[in-house]
Image 1 (spheres, rainbow, N blue to C red):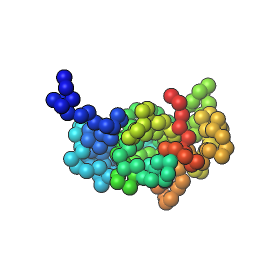
Image 2: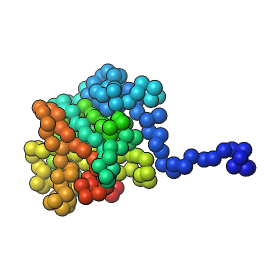
Image 3: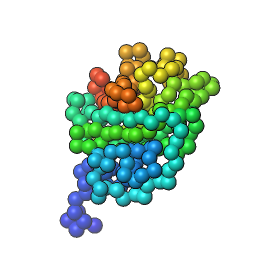
Image 4: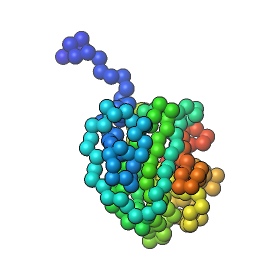
Length: 199
């Protein structure tokens, strides 16, 4: 077959195609039974192609986590997809999974609950955390990190956090900006790069 007959193939080998099919109504709201979601303004209505999953309200203190995704030069990434999965407020895993596409200014936001502490490797108790996956243009593999919360117990002995060098741990800590609201920016590369884990 000739290239003239079929046309050129897209020059981008990886996306961006996340906004078209992966976000769903309520995908960024892990605690509401509504389809509206916590931040419907972050994703245009015509991008909602999937049926939202059935939900029950999980136990725990309701919180909001928001931030921006930046590239290595500090420029916002407008077409990334941030996924989260976590335990509920009692430390039980179930259906607490969320997905949010970034806005034009690289912003994302989730409404969820403060996760309970769960056992990790060797049954060592982990600090409250949310597992995060980041997909985006030019990323050949999903990046995986964690969000920990300032002021929560167990940060000094969390089995994953203790292997991170002291001067890099702050890239994994969400800062409180108001009651029940936390800020966590994700930096994809550069001197302030978020710590990402192999998995």
